Image (tube, rainbow, N blue to C red; front, side, top):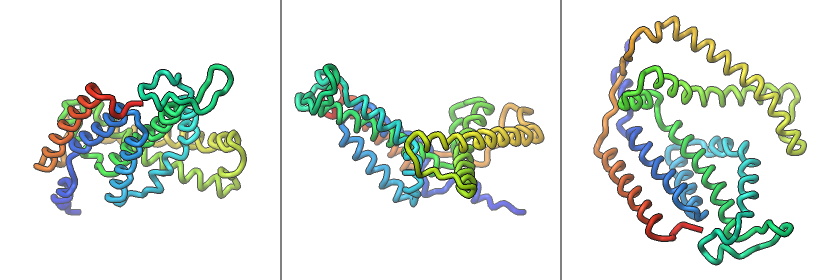
Length: 267
């Protein structure tokens, strides 16, 4: 079968992986520098807009958040009882109600809990969008540019590659368990999470089988015989990528100055 050489080159409409990582780094910087929930909600809105723009499945993105909801709610609950005097803005020190003699829920604590929820959701969305919009070969090329040993690059890219495969296996296991009469939607909180054991055990076994098959395939192809690998194409920075990276550098310096010189975005 003939291979079209144009299929081995990256999409000209897509931006370089270094530009994507720069944008992701700026988003992470915003998440960790500022504590106001409206900033994180605005960032979440932008991420959802990007997901719609690239025609990504918003339902699939939301489905990755649903298993984390109990953890998010627990984090928001416990962070809400932070010492009100620790907040800089006086309005955030207003106490809404007390629990006992030592615990008090304040406006700042409530905002801090919302901030933690949006922060974790944004991190999950950012990672999902990066993996959905970036080819595995681009990660390999990036690791090659960073002069990483090809063994480490292969381990990292394999881990990235197997995340969606394990998600597919998880959906198949849920469908198979549902066909056998398992009900994952009814019952109390503890019962639903107890039923997750029936998903995790087959998933772990499938992961071990996949790793064993991968080991056999690598050995049969002589993996480790040479210290270098052959690249299908070479990633290159174009003008729009350079503009994006410069914009990210300027934005990063600006955010650091805002954080150090002002109290904007703080609780």
